[in-house]
Amino acid sequence: MKNMKRNLLIGTAVVAITSSAVSAEVSDATVSVKAMADALHLVMDSDRAVYTKKIVNRLVKKEKVIKASEHFEDDNALVLPAQMFRFGSELAMKRAEKMDDVNFSYTLQSLWPINKQNAPKTDAEKKGLKYVADNKGKNYYTTEKLGGVNYFTAIYADTGVAPVCVSCHNDHPDTPKKDFKIGDVMGGVVIRIPVAG
Image (cartoon, rainbow, N blue to C red; front, side):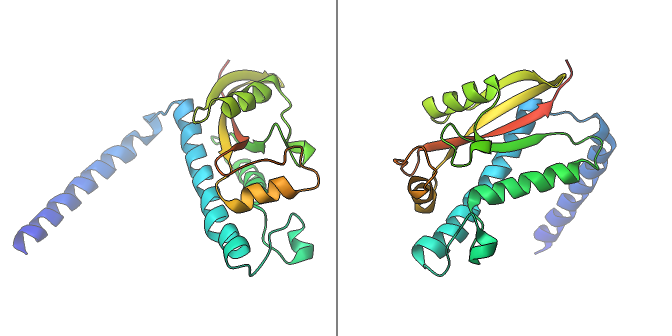
């Protein structure tokens, strides 16, 4: 018990010293733009997978207690995972407007969009979505200039992680592709971060 207390005190002291050193250097800390994009995607992808598997798939497919619908308010249903992702993107962008040093955007797009507004528009989006679809497990990174601003653009595969994903896409009346399977690339997450020219 005595050694445990001693180790706890030493550990607390190390944390306190490290914390003060880190806080003094925070303004000098840097991270690569690629690492930032990868970290942002990791959080986005994890949150979306949890919502899809543990909420939507469980309640819609397994327990059958509620449905998910793109007209969720009218249907008293769950928000679709893609809508949840878009709502999060819109809120993040709105909140980031108040933060001078936070500037990025992210969208969910597809070469086979149900909603045409989610189709790729720029050359980087078209090339990147094709690349992640053709090279499973690999991300696409590039730079592009849009509206006079230089961006680091990263595109990550968006895959069908649960039965509810593929059935929703395959059965939707507006889908251009009706043969998705679990694990298939269904689209991509596009993250843009402005960079110096």
